[in-house]
Length: 66
Image (cartoon, rainbow, N blue to C red; front, side, top):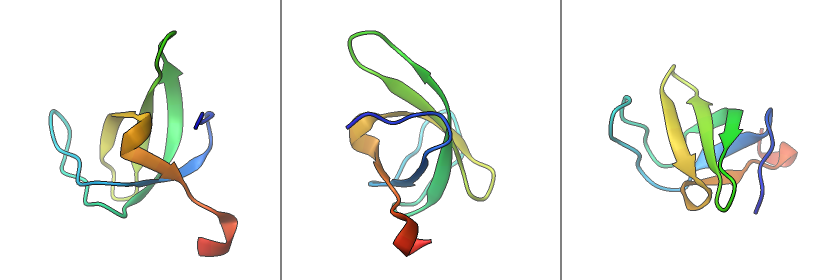
């Protein structure tokens, strides 16, 4: 699945690393996209955490779940 800047997404797993911990199910917004062969996405999650995510780390949030 391809995501675009401004898409509302949800973490599909717990995320840790250089940024703050993000629990699975936390929602956020795509603010940047990079890569040619595969994409990574900069996501600003609710609560202020920011992570660079692969496609399998996130899923689109459907408007009905807002």
